[in-house]
Image (tube, rainbow, N blue to C red; front, side, top):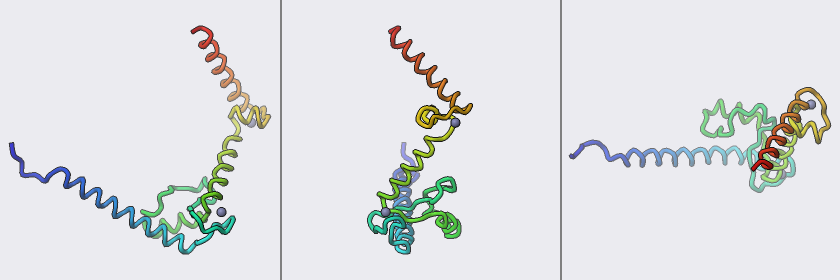
Length: 139
Ligand SMILES: [Zn+2]
Ligand SMILES: [Zn+2]
């Protein structure tokens, strides 16, 4: 049976083309922004620069380059330029801080906190460990 409809791969081709077009366009915008901010604000390096949200809690989305100028500018207001090394150091520090949040076994043990959420988190971890040990012994 013959059909007269468009070959299905034509659609796929077109989608791929648009994706590529958008990718290039976003890269251009990103580069334009980096041209205005050519140095890492921490160490002054101009190698492998990345966009960092100064306060990660204010981050709406990392993919700002596809946005309208207005939204993009508002989001980039909250950003700074860091080189890859400084960016890594910062995200590492941020995740360590997150680890020290209350209500975690880490905070209970390493942070020696005995507040209610920390104690609850610690005891539920111990319960899980005991159960796992029992299971291991039984098998
Ligand atoms: Zn740096
Ligand atoms: Zn606590």
